[in-house]
Image: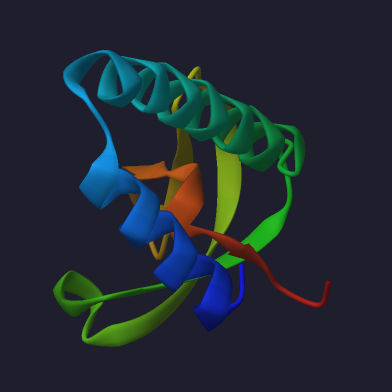
Length: 93
């Protein structure tokens, strides 16, 4: 979405009624669900992935051990962590 589209969206939301906001909320949740589903489909067991998190001192790489509904179990070093798909990026992809 471009900056001008974002500005238009903000202007429309500023004029919206409560009923309009309910419709926006439903559309937002549906889009969020579809993005999560797309993210899940991108990963499978054995994939090399990377993530950035302070817990690992910034950048870390690991291997997907299991794919759950909303998170992947990733082995980083000798530990397994449940990581949301949105935080993961395939290495070498």
